[in-house]
Image (cartoon, rainbow, N blue to C red; front, side, top):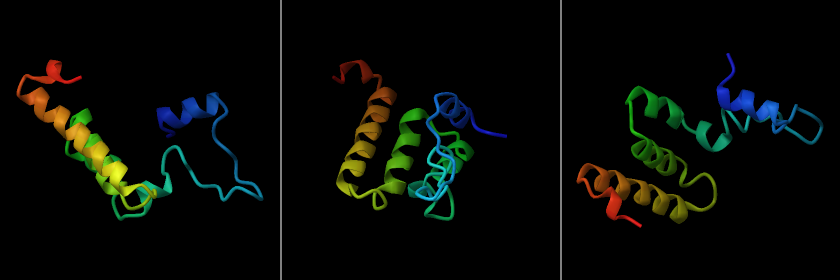
Length: 96
């Protein structure tokens, strides 16, 4: 069964069929920067029932060395972690 994201991308004609210049990589459901490890981040996020903020932390940490901008990905993970902490302290509305 296709994911909703993949189905929506097909409806917008954003996926590419394998061709001579296209390796057939699935950039919607299984992009290489998430499948380079034994476990895809989405599987961890769902299995652990992580919140949006914590799920994004896992995602950015898992891929930080795979997309060419490790510091940027780690800073994004920290940004989401700071928001989760503020939310749990009841201070989310104080963030800008």
